[in-house]
Image (cartoon, rainbow, N blue to C red; front, side, top):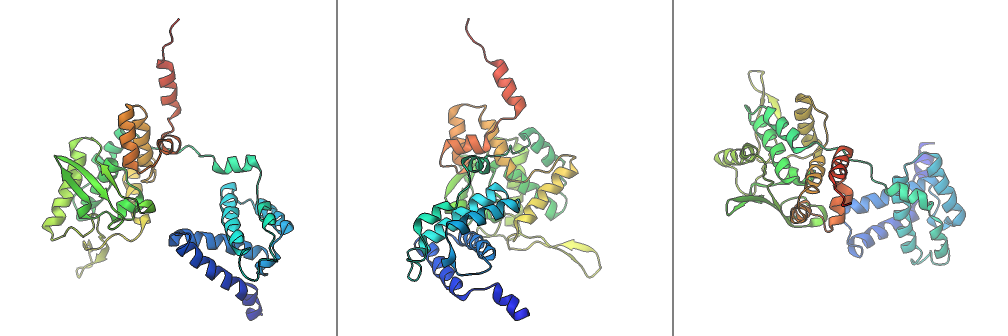
Length: 339
């Protein structure tokens, strides 16, 4: 029974096709490994639905049944939209491969669709909460800074307030990425040293927050250098806790980076909840900056767009800059009209 169950979860011909498709995505599609794995997971979900029959059984009836099955299973429209997009790409590639050309009808692939309203709903952006800079500064100032770990954590949240990096960037930033020119500081976000989105390179200037917030970062940087850390070492190294010979819990700094984004999020969660405020993830700081920029002049807004690494100002405004209802009301009420 176990062998039969295992066999039902596997189709050798399908696996060979997926292996070739993986090579296609990597070499021809130039996709990164994370995107490839996501596509293969969606294809695996379709395989599960057809009980691991061969992909050649696909037709318009199978497409309709698959869509209805996902809807009946209460899958989110966002998930369904992503799933059928990945599956369409795969089937369009597969239809051109030897052994499938006469078995998969290209026109039937377009039956993998949801309604126009469902597509719009799947793309709709929910409102993203964010704290204002005043509250973020308050939380940072309430953070203790006695131990090495406390100093590191305070510097970490301070840098996020100053630069609003993505979590993977914050986790992987190196000492060499902190640069000072003409008395102004910025992070040189380079894919050779940091995990940047789409391997983009950009300059991320420090926002003009109070001097003590910037000093939290710079004093931590100086401390690391005195400890023998070099340019290639992480700005926020791992500081695991362990029991010493005296059975007292102690933390020891290492010249290696933090491995998990969850560790970064835990630092933020502890800081905000300790200060008595709702925890919002580190990414929310990017919304804080974008919403502040909306109230400033166009040049500042454009600079923020570059800081955030957006190719279009529309992304900054539509995905990040949504004003709070109170701010929206204030701006509209302040408008004057000639009679």
